[in-house]
Image (cartoon, rainbow, N blue to C red; front, side, top):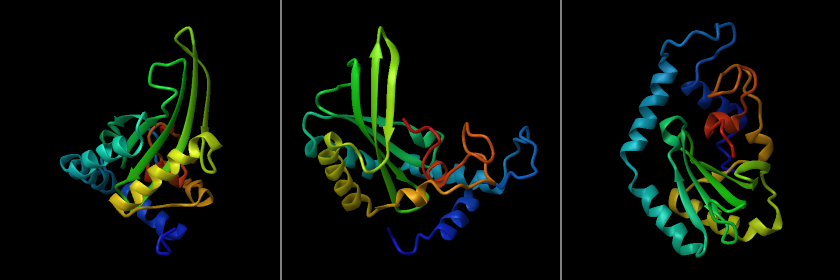
Length: 192
């Protein structure tokens, strides 16, 4: 972890982009200085996708047999997201195993988690989500994806205990006030 990214500094960063919601009615939807700042940052990132698009090609070359899906997360979240399906479980298969890489636009950090979904009759029957340490079958792919993110974006990964630090005074996405963690604020509330 970058020594400059302490929990207090990350909380201060979050509060630059998310208004404190303690004591504010849930129906209050007026734009704030913080939400306008976050919107502007997302719009700027959306306008410059060349490094991201190049990175996606590098994943394809480094992980043959895997299928990448560029998830359009910047529309709602302060991160870019790519879902990398493992070779034996392509999109649409009854069993889908994937790595999900999130790259924050708020700080030089990224996160990788593993996803498992099993479908029966077109319906989701089972799903699991793992944060590091990931199951053994994901680890070689995780290592390659992590090295690529570090080299291209100069990002680091935060320890799980930092990522899951509570941020009780902000409301993020579909989470209720009091449920947000740093991972939701720095990346997304939709981990899948």
